[in-house]
Length: 115
Image (tube, rainbow, N blue to C red; front, side, top):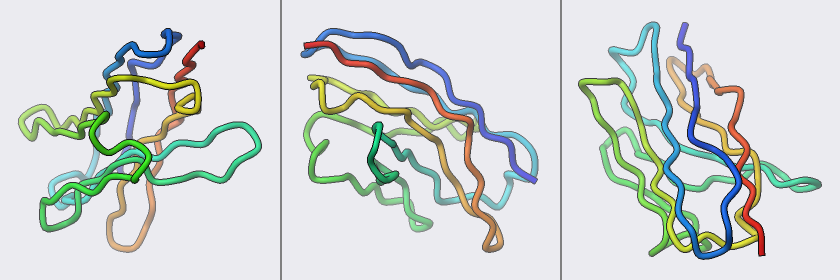
């Protein structure tokens, strides 16, 4: 079992920044791949940024150059630094990992970007 808890969402003006955190607990010693997804109202959940099992980072084209994913293995935490936020970044952001073929999701944190 893996538990993921997100934090750091909120309301920000366009052009502003936020940093999301995802703390993992449970059977996490085998986790390598972790990432962030988001779901805007009326849209499908989409990948934002993620670490692969090999350790490299992938980003959605829409956030490249603005968002940065990082991790602190000592704290079992993954971060998403979001800069130059746009109204279209408004969504619920979810932390995700997969272990032995099972997907685990956090409950999500809402990010609202006002124009």
